[in-house]
Amino acid sequence: MVFQLKIKNKFAKNTTSKNVGKFKSILSKVKYVAKNVIYLKKWSKHPEKEKPKEIEYSSNDLKKSISSKELDFSFKKYQIKIIRYPDPLLIKAKQLRQKSFFENSNKKIDSDEFDQFCDHLVVIDKSVASDFVVGTYRLLLKEKNENYKKFYSESEFNISNLFKKNVSMLEAGRSCVDKNYRDGKIIKLLWRGLAFYIIQKKVDLIFGCASFPSSNYSEFKTQLSYLNHFHKPPQRFSTCPKDKFKADIDILSSKNINKDEEFRFLPPLIKAYIRAGAWVGKGAVVDKKFNTTDVLIILKSENIIKKYSNLSFK
Image (cartoon, rainbow, N blue to C red):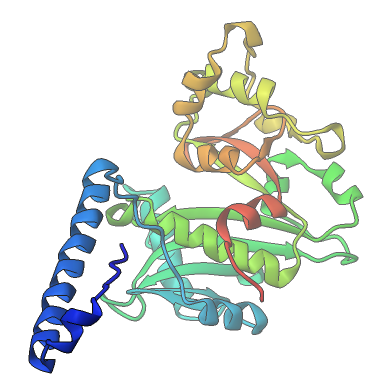
């Protein structure tokens, strides 16, 4: 709001500097009140709903992390980094996996032959301890033009079709979050770290096993049918279960599937992959060791980057 002050010459001649100063003081107060009345009117007329806060990161830290050899950045009390064997933090990550996958087991760590060849993405709660791992992802990279490499997924699925593409591929698996931190924040940090890793390593394609929480696959017949009909990959990325582990599923007709309802009942990780545009390979596998029913996720890396990096590379 603009106030235009006009003072007649007659008045100006008879006005002392003291009166002018007083008038200016009154005028400034009027302008201040008017300004705030207008603001309050606008605010009360069009109240904006408070938006949930997005996770914000230091762009300098992220750019530095991506351009460096090792991914390592922080968000508030959390540190997100890549570790490798024989880093002592790997033991902590394996202990978390054991608690997440085999809660009632007497074993202390979940470990296999692939761990020493993989990169391990971890989220650490530094407010508890410098080695308190609350989330982890296991990553096995096959770079473009690299010779054949063995993957964990091959123990359950025939993925030979994927190797026909001369692309950089990443197997992502063994994803888990501490049960006291499952409010969604840690999995977002893991996926943000995964996005940066993909950018750093120039990955083209991501794949890996994802699970339903029981080896009794008949419990998930409608969800598996939904995935089979509506999220199958193009022929060039087709995969299938190995016969000896194959779940003999009677796939329901697509006419009998409520897409919205079946999506809601998917496990959280599979649901997150689908939201990011993932495909799910044909069929499923029964994993007696983990007491799960597994499917194979296939995802173009650009989908993860678009959804979870949000970086400006200026």
